Length: 89
Image 1 (tube, helix red, strand yellow):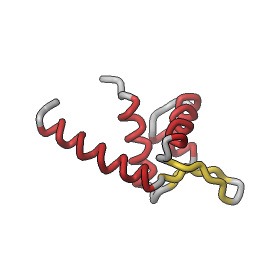
Image 2 (cartoon, rainbow, N blue to C red):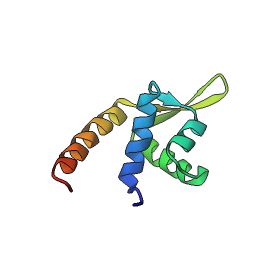
Image 3 (spheres, rainbow, N blue to C red):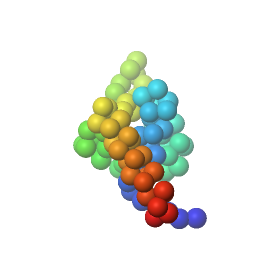
C-alpha cells in the first residue's frame, strides 16, 4: 500500500465534502479522510488559507464547506489524474 501525497489527501477531503452536498461535519471529514485529528486540523487550516474551504458555524455546530475554488480544484485535479492514469503514470 502506498502512502497518499499531500495533494491526494486534499483532493480526497474536497471530494468527500463535494459528495456530501458541499459541507461536512469535522467527524465525517476525519473518518472519510482517514486522518488523525491533528493531521486533519493541519489540512483544514491550509485548505482554508488557500480558499478551498470555509469553516462555518451553524446552530453551534461546525461544518467544513467547499468553496467555488475548492470545486475548481477537484475538477482540475480529476483531469490531471485521469490523464496520468490513461498513460499509466
